[in-house]
Image (tube, rainbow, N blue to C red; front, side, top):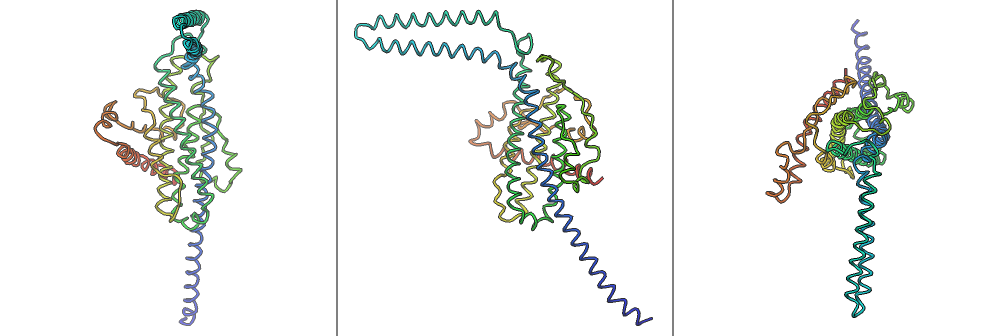
Length: 381
């Protein structure tokens, strides 16, 4: 019996050593997969979001832009013709004024030209008043229309800027595969932020009822990463929240619903920005000589330039419970104090950009970290 125990002892130690080595290799492979999956989902989110915002521009922004700026474009064309007539008159006057005794004649000529231009303008205004019909609805443009146009356009521009930052980040990933492999154990946490942004892209399709990219397309590209996608991501109730405009008619109810959509869209853009900020911070902290071409200040500026949220937005129904959870708390306005607070602060301080950036970063970091934790719990569950 003693002999057999002595024989078994070294065999057990060797077996334990092999198990530890196998576990270590398994963990390293798992870390590598998480980093590669994070990059994959970020790429998917980028090209899907580009597709979605293009559709939002066509379906929502362009009709609103026509409503708010259609009449202005006509007036501008009249103004330019008046400007052209005036410049022609001025050039004619200069030519005649060059002739010694013809100065009085030149002034009369200028006066005559201006009177003719005025008559043309008045006649055009009269014709325009009789023949003008709003392209989108039989009513004057309201302040709510203009506010919705401004906010939607600004949020779309912010999203476009974030996608450009993502493109630069993706280029860095492609050129730094060696670094990503060396620091994979530290960079594996990128996956949670990447998955959150991936989810946010799908929430955009819920908000604006645009056709979402089927889950099957993602699975075909990388079947091994299907385990990271929530099972019910393709069974959401994509209800037409704001139906496509019927013959271009924009109603008050349409604008009220659009305000609610814009408010949630602002939250989506904010969360995508904060997760990109987390990703950049992780790379800067964990990768030596990273040489990133983007930084968190760029993202902080985008967040700071987001339009203010609506105080009493319309409730958007038919959203999935998961979307409602992620959109529960709208991000704060850049300056939650007096409406003219930033202007007053500028008058008392030479430069407030750094202070605003710091405030925006600190204020939003806690929010993003909270959602970061929520997402981790969700995926682990």
